[in-house]
Image 1 (cartoon, rainbow, N blue to C red):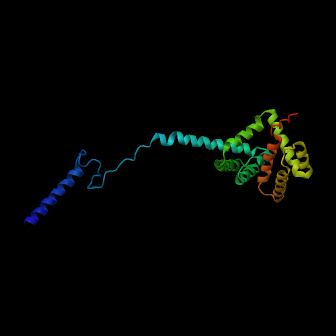
Image 2: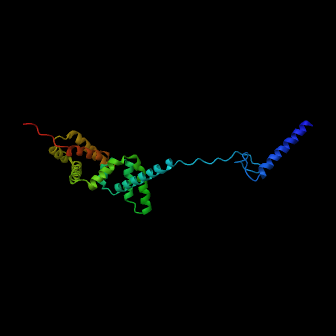
Length: 219
């Protein structure tokens, strides 16, 4: 029957094609990339070659920046607590630095420094490095000024006579604003809160004590 003849012919054709694919000694243009043994799946595609510009310099730069922040964190750990308070650092970072000072185990300290390095990503490191360099290798005049500011801050926080003495020596100082900030810093210290007003007081003293002298009035 015609239908039977077509079916048998198709079966023979299919069988011949399967044999040709299964037992062909060399890949032909028709089956190159296909699995043999009757597997007619799509050819496997090789993954695209990585772009050398994506992983090379950028990865190296990130690693360098990470180590630089960790080195800066170690410098902050070694910093005097009063000087650390001057820097306008996030409270969580300051807490991590203080905690690192009490860690003696090498591995625990290493992990804490890594954590500090991660927290440092949210901080602009430029002014922090500048302050540390000033304290470690600044000019004699700069170190003297810093020590003078620290003494004035402790003096005005001690009692109101310190505020009076400061205004007497620096008449351009705004006594009302200074007294209000000193009061807030005292409350902050008594409550054991973050030293925001303490740092602000230092900056205000720097603007007063470190300001250039006002020119004398003409006679």
